[in-house]
Length: 55
Image (cartoon, rainbow, N blue to C red):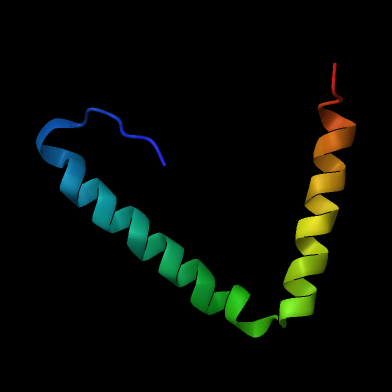
C-alpha cells in the first residue's frame, strides 16, 4: 500500500478505510469458500488481461 499526505485527517481516514474493508469482508468474502474466492481472482485476472493487454 502507498501513503498520501492527509495531514491530521490521515488517522481518521485510515480507520474508516479499515472499517470499510472489515464490513465488506463480513458481508461478502466471509460467505464464500476458498475455491469460490480463487475462481473470482482467476476471473478478474483474465478480465484484466483482456482490458489491459500486454505491450
